[in-house]
Image 1 (cartoon, rainbow, N blue to C red):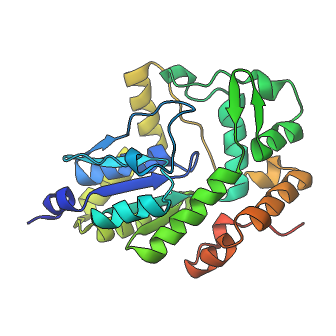
Image 2: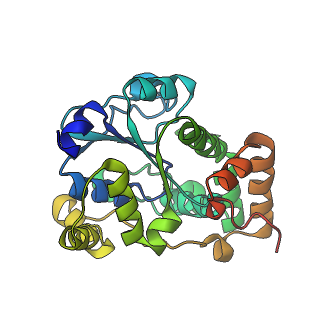
Image 3: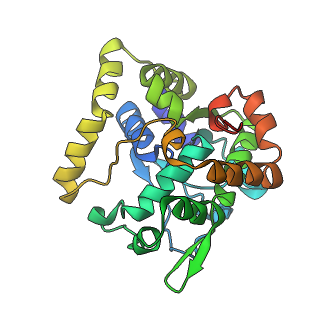
Length: 272
């Protein structure tokens, strides 16, 4: 049985944190495996990201969503002998990327924008970042804040501690995409020739993905990101708000980050 046939029995489950490079890794998986991406049916404000019923892999595709690997989800993953690929990002950069996602109405040109930019242009940047961190509610928009995403990361690393998984980060993809592609291929049992590796690199390049999005949608939802944007955009007050949230709500996250040698996900936690 070849690796892709084996994946029919051990499905690829790509779980990512919102704004951590999901579209990049989806493209890498598509080109590497030849499989299509499958998302569950999502009902805004009603779909529970910790519900095992949202884990719906299909033959001939790989699963992708911002699913939280709660205990019932982890049990289901073990039961199907899934191959989890877990993607996360520096928690401070997540705040910046989420802020721009809503302020700039990213995804608006593909019909998935939230159209709530006015809640981030009616205040200064520090206040806008605070709203992203702590959450806020308006008649037409409810944002739960950063805490759920931090909990998702803690749950992801708990899953990786219990079940064979590949863990990567936006920072590693940005710094050594070729190396992460080779790690991913090895985890999935897929052999790569230099030619195939170069093809995956080329077709997952920012310009190539952006041009393809323009052709398909008439616009592009891709925004150029870079690691450590929080150093320029987050105030020390905002960083302290994130540090406090980590300490109070996900106390195991720093320990798990050390266990998996992922210092980048919490880098920037120390005061200047």
